[in-house]
Length: 159
Image 1 (cartoon, helix red, strand yellow):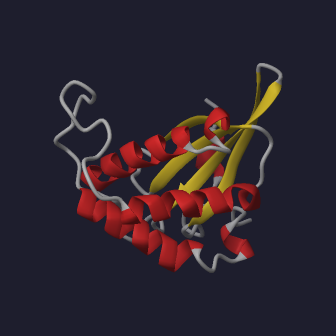
Image 2 (tube, one colour):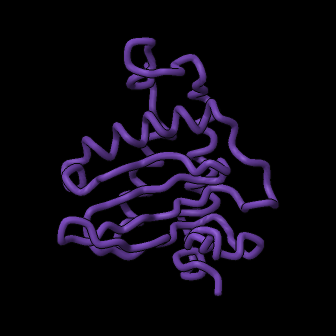
């Protein structure tokens, strides 16, 4: 079998950042997939499922309600390796184009108070596996350490 695109990225060199993972044509338009890498693969501990799940619920809710972006959001969800998230957007975008939205989303998660949207047995198949305090801590860390003063090398995959 042919190696898929995401397995061709050198994860030893990859650092936290915001990367264009791929661009695909769908229904006559481009879908841009972003790799929101939050931990350094194979170097730092991965996120636990409870904070990943809380970030997924909060991030998806934020994005699908965003006044400027909600119609362009196709998907937001975790990577299986638990080192980050994928964000799929209708349109042909660069990492720089989406950076302010990503920062805004993680500020929302960092500052969120209250019940996590969709965290009920009726709305979610694993509603008890969520950790809001750790989701907020993880969002704050990604913002301050990786997003606030992001450098160009964290906006495109390493060669």
